[in-house]
Length: 278
Image (cartoon, rainbow, N blue to C red; front, side, top):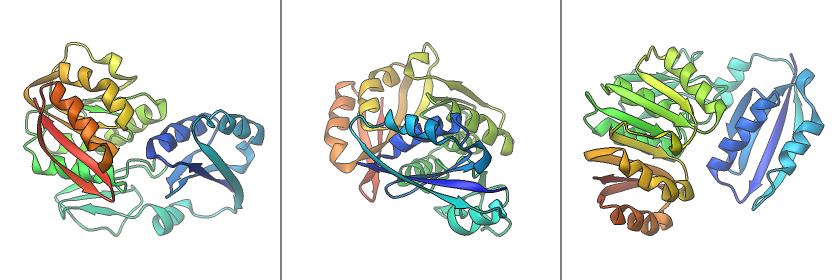
């Protein structure tokens, strides 16, 4: 079957804006998404394409950002081969964890192996924020821990936490696309202790967590941090990512005002993963 590739550029570019956009595109028939340096590529079967719906959707995204887009016909081909050759290559993190698609046959063998469906490209570990969060999990003792994964995306962090011995993981994302992706990928990896919910921090009630992972964006983190702290156990750890190094002062000030102790951060290409302890 023939596909259309829609190339979308957002100015300025923020990963969380394309996460939201991909979820909306999924609702009008788009199947696969690739994050680029300036936006994303979205793929849809030609027979399902409706340009009017696309233009209406993109016109609703113009607040605070500029959107440029173009389309290209992709003739019928083996899409697994296309993904493997051009987009989703096996990713090895700290020589300990490999993230791959179900169709990958040639990949490094590691202690931990996470399978992510390629039509759910966000959260494959390739973005700096995701890989830094995985690196944090790999160096922590997760055995028996109760984990909260806010903004879970494809569920990759929840899956990693489970593989490392976490007892129970609650995964929350505002997008239905991410909610469905987390459930699908958990099944692919034979993980049965992840409970996924569609929603936001208003879902957080009385359940307490030993570790909270929040890979979202600065403004959401600042708005919801107090709620995270309220459900974090004493001596528990909150790890946040999705913001830049220049955002550290405002994130740190908010955390310390909530009586959290700064226990360090990592950075990659100006992105930050910052950990705090209660």
